[in-house]
Image (cartoon, rainbow, N blue to C red; front, top):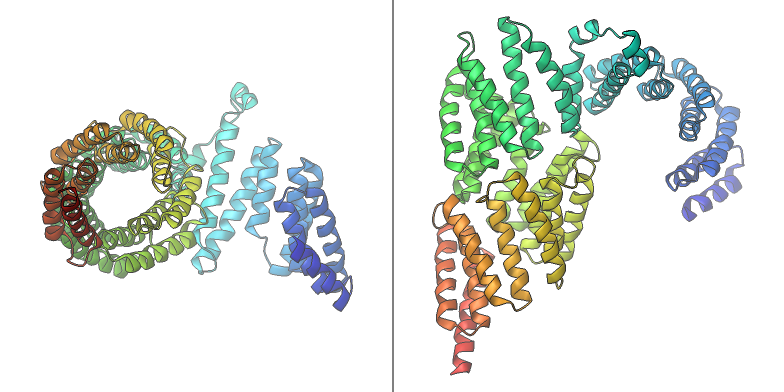
Length: 575
């Protein structure tokens, strides 16, 4: 704020109070006051800038921009008539300057009309904005993200008018043409792309009701597709049983329809497998993916995007099962295929690249992992905007890279960013928020009591959504063990570690890296209890697994060797 204020003084002194340079500085200062909530001062500064621009430039994009900003300020102050007048002035000037209206201004008027229950006008303004955005997008002048926002606005008008009490009583709403034109599906997809999964589900559920009333082949095909979309959204929301139900219904419908293509059924099997991963049923998921891959390659060709997606999921299974070499090989092939078929900035490609970053982290290649994940995050922000659940996930993975290197403060900063972003999309009782809270406290050393309180709350959430032998519950038991060990409550720490180990052995093959991680934790506790033979036994078990699963230069191998050296040293001192 001080810098912008000083810049206004400097520009006025050098170029004059009514100069373009002074007006530019006034706009920058107005933005600062607006961000701080001082709309009165912001309005005064914009008004002064408007006068300078108008005197020097006349009808111009600068004047139009200021008029739009003044309209926004008046709208925030609920001065709707004044806001609308300013928006209309801005639109007239945009038409003169650009040769068309700006979609942002049309949408602003649409939002204002909706505030005043003028549904038809609101819908018209948003539709006009969408038409312009479609043309701009086809010419590569604009990203699709702005179109998604407009579609969401159209959806808001649709639901607001449908649920308006006056319209309900008069039965004055008829959206047959609107529905027939496909808007419900577009709006649902827009919410999905914006990470608003619950809202997207609302529109897809309405679409599902429409399709299930029809008995045509096309309707059955669309029903299956919609069921799969609902399943994918449920999976993103952590509702895995619900997701499985949707996909199974889609699969049953496809299998009972003779006209359903084998490729479509295989794609549904891939979605079932993706849910199985989330439910820790890794071998079942792998079987589904491998069977589907054969069908998809045969039906669609080796380079099809569905083949690449399936390869990516096979890589994800190998990652979860602890075979990082296989995971990297498969993911690299998937990435190559996706870049050539759907481009390097697509949602699926970025998910594959994020998974590659996670594999690199597990292999101890931290610098390469960090570079990969940061590149993914930057591309995701270009694709989705500043906030999205996928960006939050990537920030979480970046935090994990830092934490693996012992860089707790850097990890914590990433985890907090991820948490703050997830709060925009998920409720406090969902897995995503609980997971972020756990990450944040893990990266904060010296707070075992506070950590245990967070872990208890997280465990309550996990048990509501997950099965009792889920990997996430096993990991949380490990973290609880770490906290109890820090409190010198070794018996409880060992009990938590043993519970975690049983879960891992139930779900994963023997010799998984996470089994070695538990063995190290148990060894450290036994060492503190001066049980040198027991500690040595656990450290040797861990070392054997690490040397089998990880590169020989991995830090976990060197750290375990140091633990063994420490056992020898302390045992010698004790004797």
